[in-house]
Length: 352
Figure 1 (cartoon, one colour):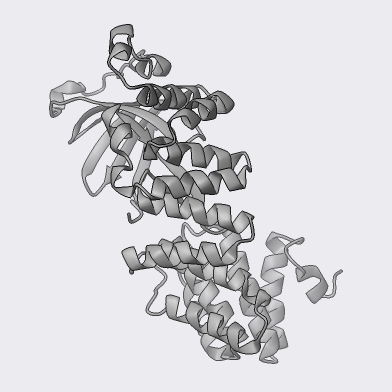
Figure 2 (cartoon, helix red, strand yellow):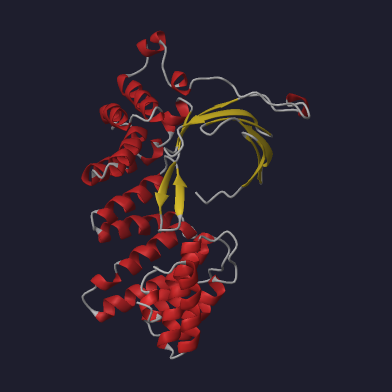
């Protein structure tokens, strides 16, 4: 599932114009409750900001220009999000208990009641969607062993992931940390489950299992830059745990191969170039490492400041190893001017 990029333009209080490859659309309403009019029809979205969980209701008809008169103030629909996820009495009579538990869990999460949501979901974990969402909540609450067990259960029934969410009109997107600067937004799919498992295994310091999950993802999606970045970050962070120099060098060469052919097209690609340069420096290929970082700094627009600092800091280390003290001082000075407490910049500049 590749990243989807779009641009939003705020054109008034609570009104946003969304421009994407599928065409333009308008979103109205306050944060957490939006009504969207676009080429695919009308869509009402409710959610709690920060939870990644939304309820979406889509109109069946296409939208003409007369649906929103020019200059008119669009009205935000007044619909309670919790009522959308509450089954009526008669529907409950014919709904299996496990599906009731899944819907009730989603409803409680939508209301911000995470403990109650997890209690409901734990009664339906044989449904992969419930296991996926319960695994996320367990991970969020730092119940790591439980999170792993639930997510492994969800992955074991990968063909049914998303089935019940779709049945009840629920969109469950979760933000997963890939690096300190990059997050992926994943849904109920094998890709999403494996990325959550990587996070759980990393926190448990089960590096071998985390790497195995990412290698599985690479086999499924060989060109996915997000997966390559996650694997490169994990390998470089764990490189010092190798017992032999040979294993250490093998890890660095693997990271270099992950960054092969990558250009600075996005934040994800720039971060992958950063880890490639780190690996090249560890292998003693200083000029290649410097050139990689220079290319990563050529495009800075929309790049997180923290990532740009990390790239500059790495390039400063390379200049120091190359004996180019003046160039290293210039790089460190730029970082110090923005963030005096970054890493050991002050000490390297002899300000500490």
